[in-house]
Image (cartoon, rainbow, N blue to C red):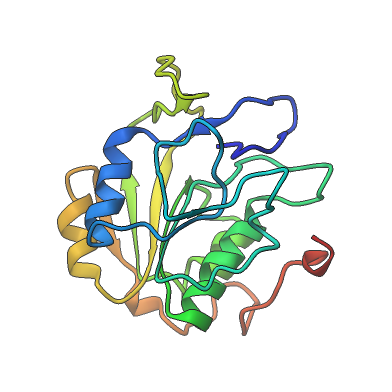
Amino acid sequence: MTAGRTVNSQSVNWCTPPKYVTAVRKVFGGKIFLDPCSNEWSIVHAETEYQLPEKDGLKESWNYPTIYVNPPYGSDKERRTTIKYWLYKCAHAHKNYGSQVLALVPVATNTSHWKEYVWGRATAVCFLYDTRLRFLVEGKDEGKGAPMSCAMIYWNKDIDTFREVFIDYGAVVDLRPLQGKIIGDKRKLHQPKLFDEI
């Protein structure tokens, strides 16, 4: 979850569990081209990985065919960023490059970042059945679960493959009826404030 970033009071790296890495690969036809928030313990093994401090995934290009994102869930006080910056990049990569994007994020459906970058922009979401998803903590299965529900969000047109793969892991919801609708008060995809500073 921290993806190599210091997040509030925690400084550990929470990595995607193996079963979800396998599922992501299946949706992408076997290959993850970009992991923009990797760390030394990640088992994603994307073709291109951005890791702090060498490469900040929010500053680098996301012009890749398939992108998997397990972003930091808290705020990065040093860089003044939150999860909304990562979700913006997901929606932006899909819209501008035609990238297939999957993101493992906390369920926060009433937040501005869901309203701006998920509802009306993503194709589907899988609300995961895991009550407390067990992330790998610095590469080890520590048996600790996330303190919140999580979801896998999908930006791309192949919802049938996404549904077929993720139906075993959670409730899959087709978001296509919301495409192009104004959710909240935002009419177009815009960068979060301070985005040009990161």
